[in-house]
Image (cartoon, rainbow, N blue to C red; front, top):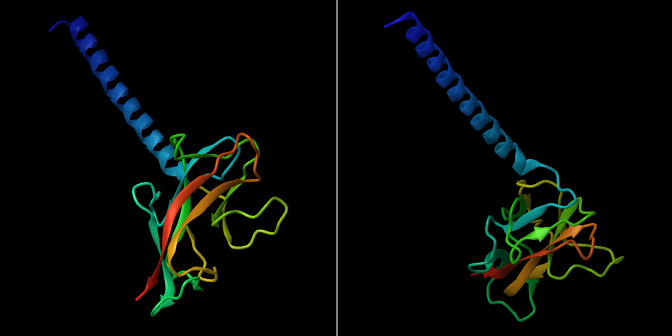
Length: 176
């Protein structure tokens, strides 16, 4: 092999090795970004998805286990069992199933049932300020022992008409 061919082969080998290193660095960098992204703070003009116990409630309502024992009476209320949670995830969401924080959003409130009218005190909601961080449903909430309902994830402060809520269908299940 001539000296010129040896030099070209060495250069080609270096280019291939450097290219592979660059691809590896970019891949690691992107995976680091993806790993860090789920815990970013909620902010303006972001799309999000909402989950109750890790489910969106689109295929079937999510069961909320209630501390209501024995035969249930119509209208009976109780408290959620411990270990259940809500969370929001940053990222693409379809227009039909996703939310948008709007121009002013800095948190997302998870309301069990309809949120109160503007200006009224908001009791019984969970304030979500970071994506990918599950928050426990407080056992102090007073909710129906049985029946269907919904958790409405509302960007706060609201910025109509750009902000968009997400509704997760739930079913309250009393214990036998």
